[in-house]
Length: 223
Image 1 (tube, helix red, strand yellow):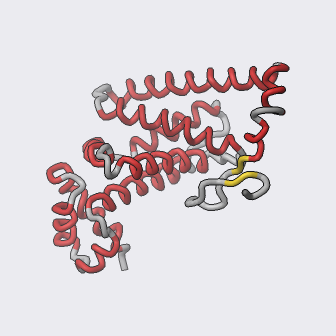
Image 2 (cartoon, one colour):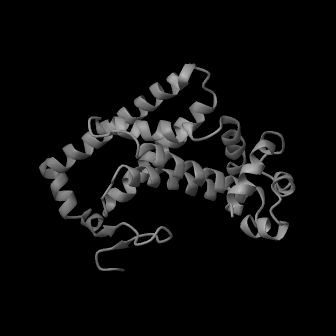
């Protein structure tokens, strides 16, 4: 039996450009898919918002599948990150993303939208084999979330062939991040930086990545 969530979501996609990620779209998807209404509404209790979130997460999964097929060994790390971001964009439809961006820009959905972008950054780092469990776990995802969010906004207006302008924009953003990372490394290497890390900023060493996706993290003492 087909996955009813995927069946309803797929049936919804043709309606999104006209009706957005809305209750109207969900109703049309139920009618088109043949999935019982009670089942569909149990899968998407918030209607369009749940449809949009499911579409976003499906894009993350498809990006990870496509990235696993690439030979990343010979690529610079920044190029691996860029490749993952571009694959994530290629896994999405521009108009559907535009409609989703409008939805998640609303005050009632903004926090969820930010969480979905964070989830994309986490999916990219996980697919690239990130093994950090300390503060770097958070900083990598926060930085990539900002880069990804800015790149999506640029991509939505990009009309260049094969999204060449978006790739150039992304490369510039990644280069800026690399410069920040170099500055952080320089700080740690000098006496003042080491003193700060061993003194006022020593608490940063106690920060640990969350044990599960829905946990905020913990320090070394488990507090």
